Length: 133
Figure 1: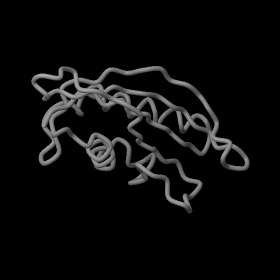
Figure 2 (figure 1 turned 30 degrees about the vertical axis):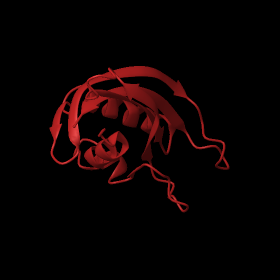
Figure 3 (figure 1 turned 180 degrees about the vertical axis):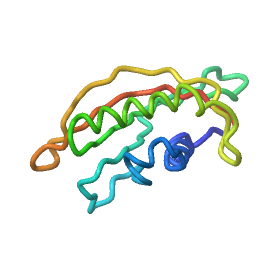
């Protein structure tokens, strides 16, 4: 059995007082049809693989994090705050969901989301999150 890292991470981010002033509880794995203009975070697992096939215990989940802001600076502040949280207090046991043993950050990019008119400011980053049950 592997850990549902999307669920673990999105639930954990919603509980963080450091993010509340920026997004409240607007951390999604699927963006609602009628999303407000307020800043939010989207958590999406885009890949992953077990670290070892035997024993099948430690898993790597590659997560894409999309940070939508009002202005570009808010989206950037969301990304920076989230990365700081993932680099520290995210490690350890998350009762009922799994244990985080390591996080490795990937690239970041500013990519406005042109699904919206006008395009919404958005920073994107990836993180490999290593977990076990």
